[in-house]
Figure 1 (cartoon, rainbow, N blue to C red):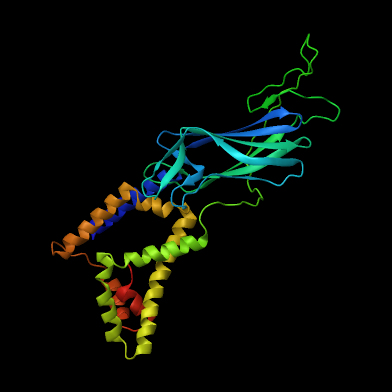
Figure 2 (figure 1 turned 180 degrees about the vertical axis):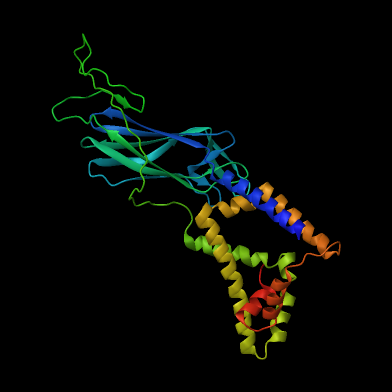
Length: 341
């Protein structure tokens, strides 16, 4: 019993370190606005990544399950978005482990630009949603809210042709006119970028449809039935329901109860992990080498126990309750007799 407790403690400490690793964001973002002419502007979003990490391209390629960056701008009657956002950087096109087909992504840094028009001084707010990955795992998708103040919109009657102004977080105010120059100078303004706690936006997400994901999951699940560890259990399961059922109706009822118990358990566990750690957390955990080594050691421990080296037993009170319920035809009996635990 002491060995089991020690093993559980080691697993919990390992998983805790893994969760801390999952939450670490390897990206750094900056936002600035460049005034092109008159009331035409260009928003520049720059992302810097730590070594070995990357962001997917807006067109990520692959099998259609990758999560590309998406950009959402809050509704603002004084802002008119012009065209689509563009990405610039050294794009890498290659196959990614665990993904079918050639993928497109950026390492080290990437810049996005979006043109827009401003009718008057205002604040442009938005959110960047992205997922960062290395070559072994992807972190849960993150959202980076931002807001940028625009304070130098041209007043009617002033000709600002061919005048370009860059607004960023380090710019200092300069005189409106330069001594000895006949050309009006446009001052540089300071841009404030502050987090937006709850941006109310409508986001258009990209990626596969829910129907595609559903039928893909059903297909892969059906294929998994023919794996050695699952297929070998079919005769035992069928025999169990046939022997304990008095008639066909009872057998169908027990089989449905058993199937629904499996669906319920894994759905609840999957939903809890996904809502807590993000939609990609299960994949990150399953592909992490530390977790796989821990499970390997646990299964080796169980295997040695099955060979008779030692015995792993539950507390007597637990065993009594389990055995008592497992011999009944109730939901709990079927659940305990042949549950996926």
